[in-house]
Every structure is written in C-alpha cells, then in structure tokens.
Image (cartoon, helix red, strand yellow):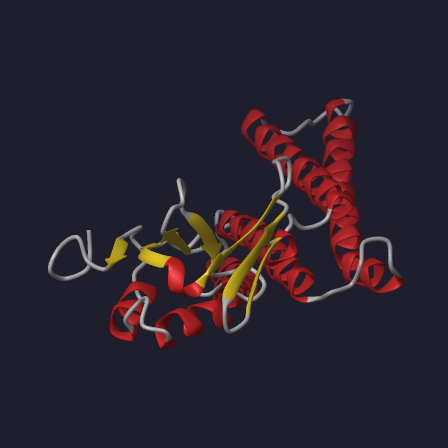
Length: 244
C-alpha cells in the first residue's frame, strides 16, 4: 500500500473516532483518534519527504524553505500541544480534586509523544532529507565505453570506466524495496566487478543499453525487476535459468 493511501486512511479515522465517541458516549474511542493522529503525522511527514526528494531545490534556497515550512509548523503545533498537556497536568496537581492516576499517566504520555514527535520533526526539517542515490552516483556511456562516477557520503569517491566489448559476465542483485538494485559487471582482465546502481543518474538508460547489446537478456531483466526478495540473476548463467 502506498504512503498516500495510508495517510488518507488514518486521516479518515480521526473524525470517525470523534463520531464514535458522540454516538456511544465511550471516551475510550479517543485513544483510536490519538493513534490515528500520530499515524497521520508520520505518514504526512513521509509524503512531505517524498515531495522534497522529487524537487531539485538547493538547501538554503527560498523554494526549499517554502517546502520545509509545513514541517516546521507541524513541529511547532506538536510541541505546543505537548507543553499545553504538561501545563494542564501541572495545574491540576495543585487543585483540590486532581486527576486520577490513570488519567494523569495518559496525559503525561500524550505530552511526551507530542514533545518528542515535534522535536524529531524539527530536527528532520533542519537536517533535510537524506541524499538519494542519484545525488551521488551517475553512469554515462557512449558507443564504446561506460563511465561511472560515485561519491557516496562518508566514503571514498570512485571514478572508472570499462569497454562494452570487455564485458564477460553480469550479475543483477535485487535491492528489495529499501535499496537500489545493482548490476555487477565483470570485465576481461579486471580484478573486481564494476557496480552500477539502477537508481543512480543514468541507471535506467544503462539498463536498456545493457539489454540491447545482449549482455543481459530482456526477459530475465524484467523478471529481475519484478522481484523484491533480494534475488540474484546471473548472465551468462551459472545455472540453466540464469538465477542463483
């Protein structure tokens, strides 16, 4: 299920929980509303991060600031709710009829959740979204050779190339739903394979060129692209079906 669908579902639960409280008179339904509120905030934050990743605005630019503004507003609202809950809890302590222990613990829990969530959202907005593969990896090619340039965060950069006609074996490694798929290209005379990340800049074009030149069959490529369990596909095959 996509993040947008989950966001809409939890958003719909919010008024539903309030409606159930009014119909049944049971305040316990508000707990469902609280869970829905937290889930809505989390999935909304994910959607916002996806929107930021899709834009090419530089950090510190007005466009980036405008996109980050909803996150800071939401963080401020969460922290304000948390502080209000703590203030109310502190005020009731000095009243003749203070809250019951269970109610006080629930209120304290809500306050801590809101304060912690607001602080996390604020820090995430200051830090910005993590770099994507296309931000630090690129592959380019012409009729004769392939050039790879990689500058992974916190690691040594790599700049290398290989000729199309030097390719001896290609291994496709499925990265699942959280990591990029990778082609490991073995060439004649090479001690190590060249890694080409399909989610990097130029990765999709490289996949097409690799199949068109016969270094990796299209039918196996489409089968590999449909997998999400971390499978490995080899060509020329080590086994009869090209899958290991």
